[in-house]
Length: 250
Image 1 (tube, rainbow, N blue to C red):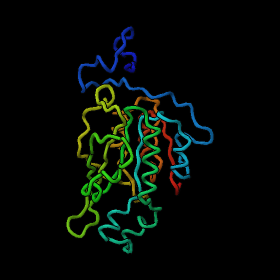
Image 2: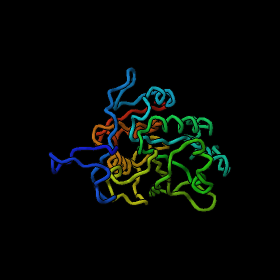
Image 3: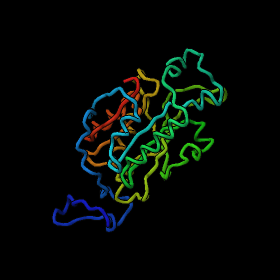
Image 4: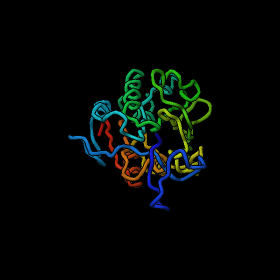
């Protein structure tokens, strides 16, 4: 049975996901359950805790959007760049996530996502080149898109130098764009320079704002269980969404 939402232009008429004519419609019919809060967890605030503990307290199928930025070691370890240099000192000091912990996060994220909900997963160049199969093994999340973020600053590399990061977009079944993804002007190569370098994993707030608008409704909950610089919190609050997230370092 299709979910419905009242059409703003015609209050006496309802619009369903089945009678929207175009996938390019700006109307979202997908709706998440109303979030009523979780005792002991703060909304729209920084929290210092383990992200798995936070996710464990969220009910099944209640969240339309999760961002996840694991602290990968693949480029540093598998391509042997090392951590000894001054440029990597801050990155190396961050808590690292082994593959089994990342798998636990992905399993919990899949559990809390609503049907047709989205996971925005940051990955590094090594994972893009070697494939996502092993990373996503055990989940039933569906790969639907990817955005390349041009950071407009040069990074490390023995041969070519990295200037980009990659945001892979997954959707929980049933896969659907019409009535779910309502913003259609986001380019798949996004230029945005970070001016706040207080955190080595700072992410582009403007891009995240656009993605939040595309797949959530005002008042919806957005989760980031490994929030780092809490850029997702800034983006969610700017778009009139509620944020729930944490980081081990606060």
